[in-house]
Length: 66
Image (cartoon, rainbow, N blue to C red; front, side):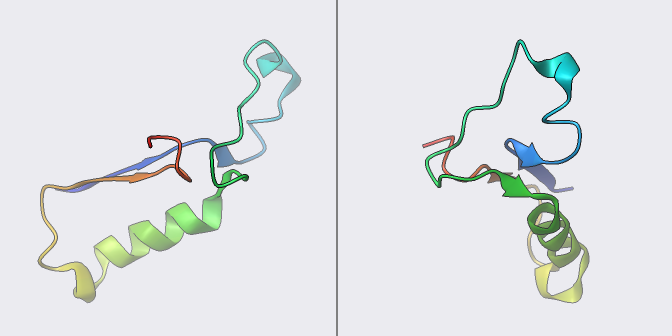
């Protein structure tokens, strides 16, 4: 089993006024992760080219974990 762990992702939930007390900070890359990037990584892991990738935690955070 693999795990995809995205950082702040540009989705409709992020700018929700109900989250005004916790605004997202831009990661070092200078932009949020896109939902398409998360989907692309997930699709890759589900495809035949990732058959030998097992037991991994893939952090997709635009540099926030550095």
